[in-house]
Length: 452
Image 1 (cartoon, one colour):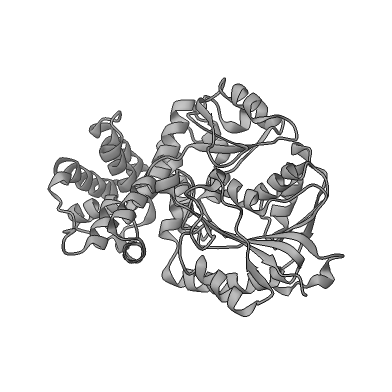
Image 2 (cartoon, helix red, strand yellow):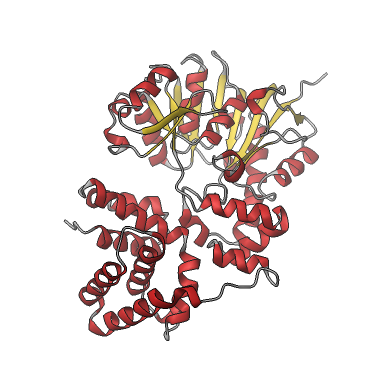
């Protein structure tokens, strides 16, 4: 078993780079190697993996200045060795420069041979001594290019955000995206109340505090042991879930005894939240196109003590009311999206998404929302949500839907302090990492009109 954190970090990054899978899946594939490290080495390993992906464009801008070989001609392993070493030099104060260079060169000898090791040594020594001389793009001439390099955002997305949000907002977003987010979870109120869980978690983590908007949320930093080893986790006293995702379920506001559809349940974070708000009374139908996710959802439900969830493997776009025994009081359409609102937690997404993905997913979201709407009873509630801040995936989807479906209308929650600052004048829920310290989410609550 590999024991060196840098070697494991390199292996995970290369595995992610060479496949179409997410970083989460690559981390899962090497979870045993990572968990076998000491606490400090485990922290270093994760810092290298996430740090390199958060700051990749900034690292590459400097490396290109000192490399005589074009990046396209450098194999994945040597390229990520360069990035890992330079990340340590630029962003990790406790690691001496010579140690960062030496370990990368030594690894290169074993992995790629002496010639590549010599190349890495030359580039890193030059970069470490002269990185401050590499000029950034002029923000006055091209603000989007400056932001792309300075804050490691793909240039297409930097230009898009500058146009949509303005330069200052884009910079604020990028700064927050490149920080390490707090760990946020949702109290399982079927087993424990939030104050009691806060007290328990204070023994194994620091800065434990209740969230401001999510009524069952808790936020903390620096857990002393892995979360999976928390006694509270083993007992099913909470689920890890960002505050923004919790607010979406609060917006749906399921009631005890109702029939609820979670149309794209995934791993079931919001499904479990629904069951808590319903006090484990009623029916929740959790559907998804991926069987494995539903199986994981069922296992989590048992640990949480939830008894009202039923799972159904379906493709929503090929589904009608004939596939169910009844119309639903409330339907949550947590749609597949670009995930550009959760870059702080998933920095790999920055480098795998494109403009075409936004257009493709927007078209799919419109179709899925229309399909979900057909399952809502008259007078029932439909909530559309995505973890994205892109207008094409947000208001454009809702506007197109309402233009076609005259049997639905906006049904925003009654204005209260609970959602202060999160609701737009149009009645849409919008959260941002920079202003709310939570994931970027959009949600709209709609009501199916009762025919007169």
